Length: 256
Ligand SMILES: [Fe+2]
Image 1 (cartoon, rainbow, N blue to C red):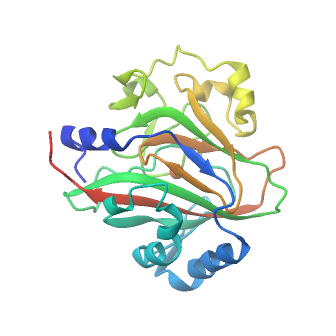
Image 2 (cartoon, rainbow, N blue to C red):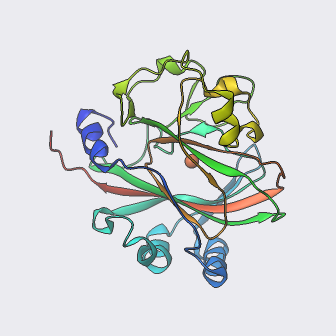
């Protein structure tokens, strides 16, 4: 992928509010996805922080298990290919986008369309963590928002000074520079469940919240791949949680 002006113009056309659709996958369908995770994928790897990722064969996964679930929610005719992974994580995810790395292996003619998340299970199942979607989109390569002591441990671009992030877009401001003096209020911080994230409120200054949803197995979440998001540990923490994340890729139109 090439993150140029044409890329940004095209991605802007696809932007829409993050959505939570509960109970899209019943227990049997979740079991089928778990079965695919362990038997249908082509590769697995562990990360230094204890995540287990499994992937490969995602176009087949999409045709068999996902496409009919999202036909009324997304324009599936735009989907050229799928990337993503199944994950097991022992911790919450920090503030980040799901965009590719700068030196990604995607074709030059490919552009991100949308991402989906399907929580599969959590252990123990009393976990009450959330997933938080922010108003901010970063229509550029992937990045993490790492103010404070809780750093994301990824190889994506990491920012502790959010004003240095280029190509930040919101529906109300268009393109702008993040102003960390625009502080998040304590009320919004708590109402969105971020006090159980577990970062301090300072990490979120300059960001504003679009939606905070409970992280519920069987749900489907649809969001922009460039949308800033994070998850929380919750009041009743978890030992591991497993989910499926897919990013849909479309063809570059080259319109300016
Ligand atoms: Fe993500």
